[in-house]
Image 1 (cartoon, one colour):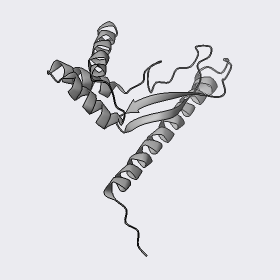
Image 2 (cartoon, rainbow, N blue to C red):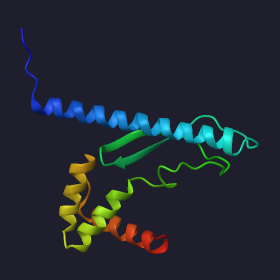
Image 3 (tube, rainbow, N blue to C red):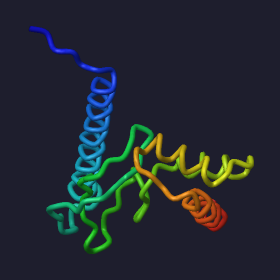
Length: 140
């Protein structure tokens, strides 16, 4: 007896595999970063245990449950992304570029939905573009 698997099922499965792989690698890199920070660069500082959860939008899709090492005392910050950053830099740059080239808020929202897999209101794209442009103006 054979079972038919649709292209959509295969595509979804592959997307899940890619995002899980990316999540695992990002978490491993952050763990190694933190271990190196406390054991090699700053052995006199108290090491921290545990993690907190964060959502991160990547070019591979949305990671809903990324385990990020803590920064309770302000000693350690990962180099993978900035504090409070919720999307990779390329996404902000792409949204700004689309906004500057006259794409509508609806077009940007549709793009974000296709890339990230989450539905956004039409005005969200222009709001993100405005925030990212302000941040990049302050911190080039």
